[in-house]
Amino acid sequence: MNNNSKTALLLSNYAQRMERYFYAFEKHNICLLHSHFDKYDEKTLPVEPPNIIVVDLTETKAYTVEHENIVKLIRAQYPMHTIPVLALLKSVIDEMSEQFDSILLQPIHADQIAMRANSLIRLSQMQREITLRLHTLSQNFNEVPPLPQLGDKHRFSILFIGKATPKFMVIINALQDKNVSVVAAFTSFTAFDYLYEKNFDAVVMNGLGTIELAYSITETMRKNAKLYHVPALLLVDKKTFDDCDTVYKVGMNDIIDTSVSLDEISARILEQANFHRTHKHLKHRFQTLGSVTVIDQETGLFNQHFFNAHMRRVSDVYSKLGKPVTLALIRFTSKTPQDKLTESAFKQIGSMIRNLVRMEDTPARLDANIFAIAFMGHTVAQLKPVHERLSSILKCAIIAHPETGAPMQMNMEITFNALTEQIQRSNVA
View 1: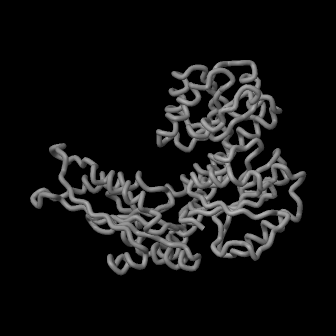
View 2 (view 1 turned 45 degrees about the horizontal axis):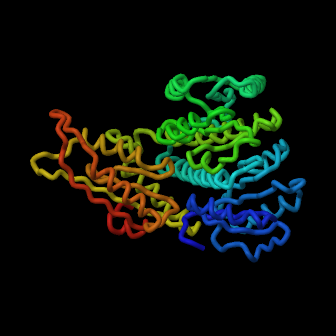
View 3 (view 1 turned 30 degrees about the vertical axis):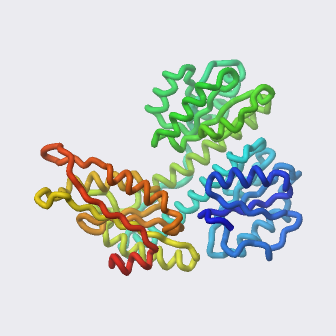
């Protein structure tokens, strides 16, 4: 086992693919473990539960009861953990849809598998944190917030970008026949207008001619917070296109060969759109949790009362799961005693902290000038890059004085410690 914070268990009979799979997962900081379906032995399972199970069925005639039982046996070995299952399939089979948490259809690039595994692991972490926050709100604050349903009956909205070639238009028409809302942008100017003004479940780009525009748009999307998670798909003719590595390197999510059936093309597009919408729903759930009782009104972060109660619950649950929890404490003081930091300054600081952490991390204001962030499932060592990033951004941040507009001079101290150590030192619990 390496020092990666995430692990994936791949169930497959195709050992010849292992090298490229291992390399792709390693790039995404996931340690890949392999088990043969035909030689499965539960005694060889890792002691620590994997974060995800990947089931490779791309060369299997059918998903049999034997396959299903092996997945169930593996999950049963880790009863306290909810482990998502990603299936790699030859084609969509409706009756199998409920067997897996997500699917990818052949042909599948190794980077594409690793990216989807990474996303599923994060969704699982988000769902666990939502559940814990709901328990804290209910049991400690007598709050039961209404949650939006994950199901969404609204039509998927897809943006198509590129020249109106015949094949391109046929695919657009096929999706419209499936009650999908399709917007077509035939130039880069209109494409960016749509991307910044509207919300889409997926973006499909025409790569049947030149693909430079598709690369440029995707790279721009991956640098924009609003568009970062929106899936980007590229339509190509696989007879003349073979630069798959570059496609995934720039941040695209899938490559679709236009020579396959319209049903398969539609399925690949809508699968990506559906996965993205699931992520959006979970994000919305996070944003709806908490009333004025648990939220610090100046910063929008959780207050000390919620943080203390929640950390006791988190400590107990993660201790039983055998997973680490790390707390960061951040203290701000003015460099000039006569120029005290104002609530306006702390409001700006709180906003920055909220935008710097992930949805599943828990940021809070513990005192007027003391903030905390809880990182679940990560050790202090694993969070070293996060420590460096937070320190760099917060130390360089310019906080404007509310009256003069002049930059306020601040000192910042930031420490990362394991949960039990930090509780003893900061007395937050």
